[in-house]
Image (tube, rainbow, N blue to C red; front, side):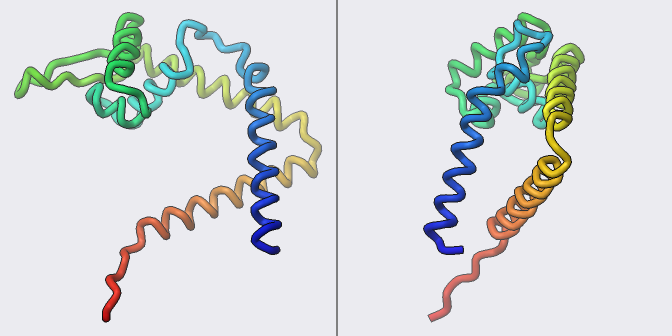
Length: 160
């Protein structure tokens, strides 16, 4: 495949993904049981799930939010009992944020809803579409592995 054809094909895939997201995501997740938790707040809960405890500053870096925005989001999550702030005993200036059981339950419920909706979506696929989808997911996984391997490979200094 030529480089031009490859770029055109990649652009078609990206356009298809964009259409899927804009047209279907609202429908797929309309049944969310926690309407009081925004997607941005879920993003913070997910970041804490993988990096708990953490500081607000670290959460801001992980999620791409500004520090004031991250602090405000953590405030709202704490008010709802989804996270807990604690001061470091060794350095009272350091405040850690940790996921509570209630926050973990909300995140688990959302992941479960996503899974249910994906099962529903895949159930509407033909056998051929489902097979092609699985092939595409395997291709994405393989490409991600190759990227990770190439980015973690040591760079050898040029010798002159």
